[in-house]
Image 1: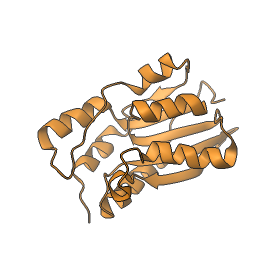
Image 2: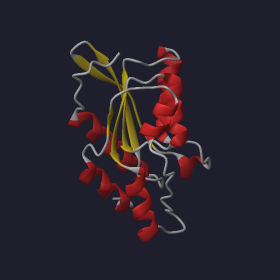
Image 3: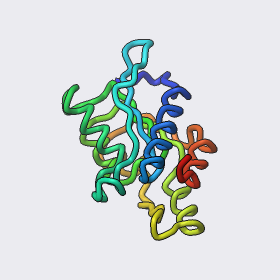
Length: 167
């Protein structure tokens, strides 16, 4: 269980941002995620990855879902001591996976509304930036999960990822 005094750490979101940049460099959407495990006063990285939706050809290869699957395969189906950091608010599908995995907390940078607003103004055929305007908080509440959600964490740095298209 994540303690009520938990505070997100910049270093873990920074790692998710670095993963997002690597994803973009290989031709994917610049979205990154990190899963940490809280062990008393320590927090350690268990998994870090960038999005693979475009490069895999699968619309459901969201980085949050893929990292949750990876961590679950090694640590079991329930993850109450783990924190998901994502540069983008988990969509309804990924938030649903957080419900089923009983993740301990979620930290995200930009919201679904941020994604939709950017996509409406700057989306292209290659980078559509679609959003599912159902908040992860709503999905978690409907799924009976009352966990800490830290939105807009390092939001300005995560917003810069929208326009990042490689080195």
